[in-house]
Every structure is written in C-alpha cells, then in structure tokens.
Length: 505
Image 1 (tube, rainbow, N blue to C red):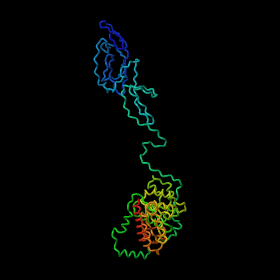
Image 2 (image 1 turned 180 degrees about the horizontal axis):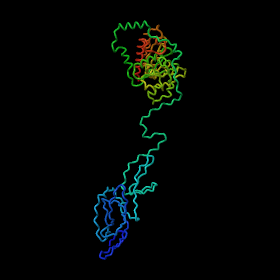
Image 3 (image 1 turned 120 degrees about the vertical axis):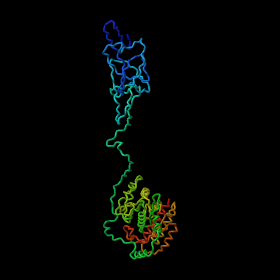
Image 4 (image 1 turned 180 degrees about the vertical axis):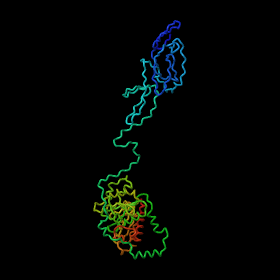
C-alpha cells in the first residue's frame, strides 16, 4: 500500500489472484499555482511531495491543474510514494523552467491548498497608460494588498513578473476652449504691445494752406547773379584746395561719434531774430552729414514754423500727444511712426498742428527729451524765447546751447545779460554755449568785430550767420539755394555746438 499526502489508501492485489485490479480511488486535486502570463511555456508538472524540499536557486513555476486519470493507477505509473520508502533524489531543474531569480523570496510561492476540485486560471490584463487629463493610479508595493479601482477584474498574482510600463507623463490642466495646445505654441519672445491711445488719433494737417501754396513764387538764390559770377571766376583762377583743409576738418567734427544722445537747445531773447531758421540750419546740417538718426524737436507751441522751414508737407502727432503714450519699452521703429520723416533724411516732432493751443509745460518737455534721447544721436530742440519756463529748463538741462542774437546794438546788449545769467547757474553753462549773430539786412551799421569781441569776453563761442536772400524769403530751406558763406557758417555753427555737447558730462 502507498500513502500519499492527502490521498486515500489504495489496496493492490497480486497478479496471482487472477482477479482484475480494483479501480483506484479518486485522488484529491493537487495544489495549483496560477501561471505566469508573461511566459508562454510555464514548464512541465512536477510530482507533488511534502517531503521533497523546494530548491531555492531555481523555484518551480506554477503548473496548470492536471486532468483526472482515466486509466486505473498501477505501481509502475504515477504511483504515490510510500512514507516508508526513501525520499527520491531531487530532480535536476529543466532548462525550460529556468527564469530570473527574484530579488526577495516571495511568500506566496509556497503551495496553496486547493479549495475546490477545479482551478480558475486568471490572466492579468495589460496595463494601459491613463489619459493625460487624469491622475495615474498608483501601483501597490510588492506584497501589499491590491488597491480597489472599482472594477471586478481579479488582481494579478504577486509572484508574476511585472511588465515594464513607461512612466506616465505629468498631468496637465485641461485646455481652455479656443486656446492652442502648449506644444503647438511657438517659442517666440513676446513683443511689446502698442500702447493704448487715450484720445482719438489726430488727422494729418498740411503745414502750409493750399491756397497760399499757389501764391508762392519761385525761390531765389542766396547770392545775387553778379556775386555768383565773381565767385565762379575766382574758383577758376584759384587752384583747388588740398585735401585736409577747412571743409574736411568741419566734416570730421560733424561726424564725431557720441556715447549717448546729445541735446542741443536753441533759444533767443526775443522773437523774429531767426531762432527757428538757425535751429533748422543746424538740424539739416547734422542730418545730411551724420549716419545715425538726428531729431529736430519743436518745443515752441506758439505757432512754430520749424516744420515749414524743414520742408515737411504735413504734420500729425505733436509733442504733447506723444508724451501721453511714450513708454521706456518702445523701440525706435515704434517711435518713428509718430514722427514726421523729412525729405533729406532725419525726423521731426512738431509742437502743434498749426493751431493755437495750450503752451508747452515742463513735465511734457522732460518726458519727451528723456524718452527720445536714447534713440537719437543728436536732438536739436527749437525752444521758446527767454525768459520762458521751458526755455530756461532747456538751457539748464541741454548738453549744448545756441543763443541767437540779432546783429544790432540792443540785440548784442540783451544777449550779454543772458550770458551773465547763465554764468550764475549751479553748473557752469558758458563753456557749452555758442552765440549765433544773425544779419537781417544786407547792410549793417554795427561793426562785426566789436560785437563778437564783446560777447566772447564771457567765454562763449560766436559764429556769424550772414544775410541770405533765400533765408529771408521764408518757406522751406533748400540747401542748393543757400549762399556759399551761409553753408560754411551753418556747418561751423553745427560743429561748434556738437563739439561742446560731446565734451559736456
């Protein structure tokens, strides 16, 4: 007789009795382990034995439940070992049963007693990556109880080798309707939005009434015909000047580089002495010679004529309107949209649109000059006459000053008083001041040398602007119609003012 664990006693009769062997009693079902879903061949069945130890280095894989034997058991086939028989030697592991050794021995790998005659084999479903808008379900640790997810699926056995799953991407908030996904948005540095205009955009206004344009005659030349004829004869008789003369020296002084924006303020002690004309000559000379941008700023809102003298056909934005929308984040291309481009190069910012308006105040002047000086190499400001508040502020804050004085007794005397006032400022302003003596008529009864010496006693520079028929006629200034002496004097005045502005700190 043989005794097996959990089995019944089966009598075996000898063959001498001549009787047929009795059918063997049904055996109790052997312990069944669930197969590993990741392995296509779980291995062959091993005979269950309580006395045989399980090898540690190669644990046996789970085997499916065998079918009940249909033939009677015999001593030679599948006979249960007897407890009195010696324990069989451990069977060498099969190469088909080899699998990676787990890092820690799993307690669930021990034989589990069967609960019924049939075993249910459950295959674990493949893990599916959760959608990006939902939170991933955390996986339970090894040996811990399975987490209920609200489904009826049976959890995978703990001894199964888990299938490697790539890490889920981090959860992103749901996109709002109408917005682009984050991956489709181009990585572009955001450009500063245009400032909101707190007032209606102004309309373009012509600088000269169209009815007056038809009445303007042909512009005259600065020199008379007889004078131009004499100059031509002298040029033919005189050999050409060698390179590096006075004109080349003036060109080098006008093109001197600047480290930051320089402001040149132009003013006078009274109106009608050629202040705006002088500012236009200085601005046009710098705009023609220099390669960097030059701005002509009109800081006189009392019906100034700087736009007419510079040849601007129309004006639109004024200094008061630009001060309300000017921000430090604006670039040069954003600012030039509010300026007037001049025919011969350069830019213009007028003070008004040819209408009578409120006078310019100091905060507006400071806001515009400080905001634009970093975009323009040189700014020529046509200020109001002294002793206006804006004119005094401009004379105090500018890098160079040009005081226009008529070549008359009262004009030279009043200018000397202004120069004495400049000497009393907290910082000395006389070293950066130039006086422009203008001749309003071709015949002057004041000695030029005496007038210039009287003004130079204060330490300022003095440049004489002679009488020019083209300038006296008014209207747009055309450089090709200026006299030779006027062109040379304008270049010398611009070079003197720029030289003193660069030296200022």
